Length: 554
Image 1: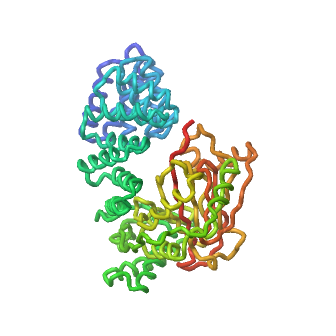
Image 2: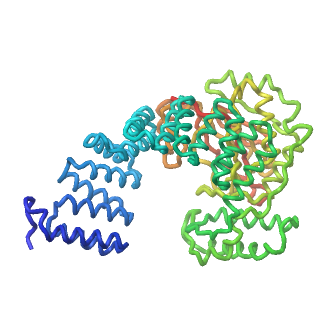
Image 3: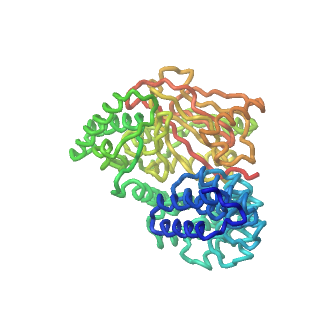
């Protein structure tokens, strides 16, 4: 049959096939729906409705490139359709094509200025893309159409806070909560904004209200933990952060990972053996040790290169019951005599920091022997290392089990001891990375904070090369207009290196020393230096990072 010409596109046969496809789609028969839509296009290759329906069907099948192509062809045939443009934006957003999504949403609101969902999605896309003033304008357009849209008031608050308009952000969050008192994100965001202006009691109340509605709400648990630490209530802080870790890891749900990291299996095997050697695990976990050893042997037999290995549910099953659980957590209590070494030269440390632009300084002999030993034991014994990286290191974060009274004590003593460095900035995040001696460390990045503290706790005798193993810091700040994905993504390493070369950045190489801290402006790019440590469990390089404050806004 010859294709039907454009003037007869809406004939009964095409319409019947489109209806048939929609019936299949509603019944969940996606392949049959695709067949019907393609038959319609055989009859009328440029039929806009058929192209649009096919595009939406392909979107349902996660075939995003084909979906974008089909809807784009529909728009070419019917360029005045705001619906087609809107759906092209939805598919492009899902396909991680933010520029195309923004263009499509813009066209949708040009064609239909009263298209509420298009204004909302345009605002979201612009906000995620870092175009904050334009996102605020889009949200305001949406709210002019529907002032009762609680989600949009919340999103407007996020954009306003990102722009530094914290009081206006608070007003937006409160409006969202007036419309929907159980709006969890608005309660959490309100708490964060209140923290930023120093209203600790109100912030704590907002996070607590969110947790009353949903006790396992991880964001609110974490932020409440931070708020309690700012209030000097370290026990309450650690309790919240431990509850967050338990909610995240000890949930009893099946492990469904499609990949494992060789480095993680190697680490967990060494750590569990270490815990058995110290009689810190019960015999109930002995089968887990054997299963880890078996899995490591199987992975060692694979010829495929790389650290990240695909794994089947059957292969993972023997370790799954314990793999992501917090099997053991060591104690790291508050030290009554202090954690920072009493002989620190505060004046020299602060003067070095303030004399450099951008700011960098170092602290030798940071901790007392008791504090250093307590942190080491906590990191060696606690099964909190759940975040895996291709380079072969594992991370533990505050909300994943890394919080302890000792760690919070160190963070607060640093802030109080060096007021000219930390100023008004408070602890916002902390983590530790434990490295595989056979692999490399962290890639180049900057952090979303005001001040970084990075210190090392593995004994010096573990380091095989005293000239390396530490940190490389570049003396140029990340461009203010770059967002987090720009300056903190492995995929952007070529872009970062090209920019550093363009601006003539110089690298400062700080060799590894145990109990040595580097304090620097968080906007500075930095990376782990080459590492060569002994290949045994207690010799793994451990670095601890504390972040204070927020990144300065453009």
